[in-house]
Length: 382
Image 1 (tube, rainbow, N blue to C red):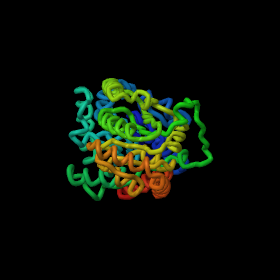
Image 2 (cartoon, rainbow, N blue to C red):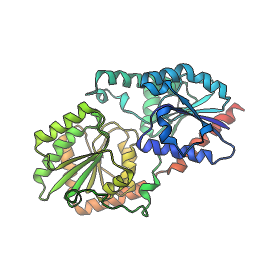
Image 3 (cartoon, rainbow, N blue to C red):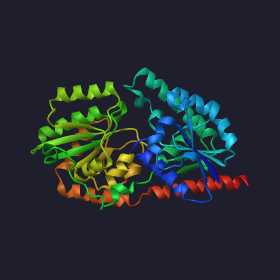
């Protein structure tokens, strides 16, 4: 079976680990011939995972999101036809609307399908998000199979966008064995003594406008004012959206919590594992998530979780989280305080996190489930 993987997008975080693991596992199967179509900037990401003769690079897809979409929709189908492959696999939410061979789309995001998601984005970014939404729907309608990371998202696409149920599948994202492996010992990784010697809440999130960090900061200030011990809020995640980052820093100053909040930016997996394992609580305030990698990582490390009760969060964590309405600052404050001041409950949540993580598939299992769908489509062609 010859499989083409569309890697013309830029995978990151857990999605990057998952797609690299999938490529590695598929390469170990003798009867599979794998071809990767990639943008040039992904070369460093896939180095050592693929062979040079497996990769076809696109210069046009590398220039911008717009040129990537143009290449994917107008030129990529001709390359696909030339390859004489059996399956096109698109793990980055969109692929060519027209494919000359059977195609599978993996839907890994949900935000663009909610109006509140677009608030505080720049107008140009809003246009890109609306275009992304358009192509996600169009590609899902034309694809032979659509894989969703949660039942919530599958139901949304079926009921709102009329995607056929008989071609819709749910595969929960896999957990990364790095976070579950107790032999991967962590130390303080040169974190300052001031940081590691204080109790801290942890929030792991790219600082995008929809992530609801401002409400978390207001709630945290209220918790600090009522808590009897020194307390920190550590926010780990890339700070790529300058306008929103400035808004966060201004909010911290206005609330007078400069000495309590630490913006770490992007951190390594080793540092992240340390932070999960030693946090008092992992707080996850985002209202719009599909099956969040952060929550899976946190549960794998045994972090007690307090998070939003919206979209796919209850499906992801089940009973391994204390939930709040992400738009209600009073409720966010209340639920954080509840876990922070009740050590028995906190320990119960640690145990529930670990138990829930063991119910989820690992990356290898995700690959096998995906491969089963590919084989099914190919067999239907015969």
